[in-house]
Each structure stands twice: as structure tokens, then as C-alpha cells.
Image (cartoon, rainbow, N blue to C red; front, side, top):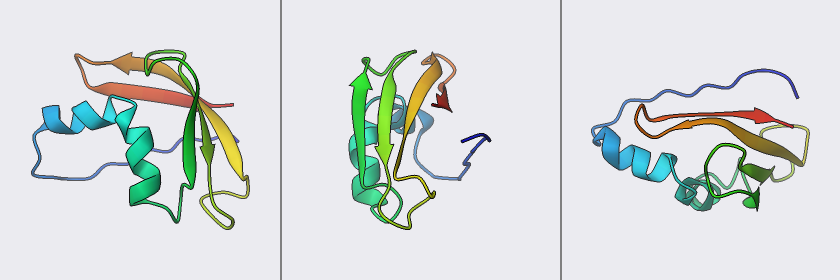
Length: 89
């Protein structure tokens, strides 16, 4: 799968509170609960949430892609600038 996905949204929550979830592996537990129509399961294949962490992302039938699952590898995790980038395998 080639391409880039970027999501932006406005919130009244402090950035530090958002990064506490987004910058950690807690997000991987919450996303399937909050967006079950898009993600049925996210599993940690390898790593601790830092660079080179690999996740197996599984979508339900007729979910976000034609693929049932794909792997995502964190390429950049910068906790000072609150940036996380990943590539799909």
C-alpha cells in the first residue's frame, strides 16, 4: 500500500494530554474501541512504542481498505516535538 495519510483536528484538550495517549501504545488499545468500524484490532508485533515498533493493524470486513490487515512501522517518534511518523509494510 503506497500513499500518505494525515489527520488533523481541533480540540480544547491540552497538547500534553493528547500526546500522552497518541505518543504511547495506549492509542493502539483505544482506537479499536473508539473506531470499531475502521479498526477491529491493533497488535504490537515488536517494540516498545519507539522507533522501529511494528504494529499489525486489522480492519473489519469492508473497513478502511481492501486489505484485512497491514503492518505499520514507526520511523520517527519525537516526544519533545510531539511527532510520530510511520510507514506501512
